[in-house]
Length: 129
Image (cartoon, rainbow, N blue to C red; front, top):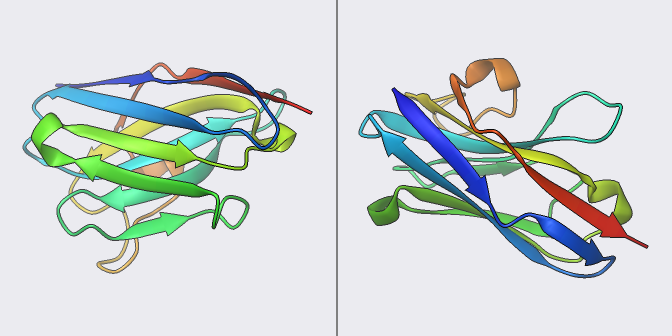
């Protein structure tokens, strides 16, 4: 079993920054893909960024390219999402997800939620204008 715990959410003004963390525990040796998803109020969950933890390959949603950076610290079993130049439309509950194996092709992780088996409880990010 794998447990994922997110932290780092909060309230910021537009233009500010936050760094989210996702700590994994349990049977983590098989995890190869981790991702961040978000669900704005009244909307569907969407993929934000994903990473292959051993290969280092990343993918981003168009809406966050150039502003968000996903990274990992394998020694700490932790994945981060650095969010800069935040906008009110970034307001959402942010979820960490993980899965064994590769979530997508060899070159590109997936941003499709059904490709991920393990999920955290979420952390709220609120951006005010």
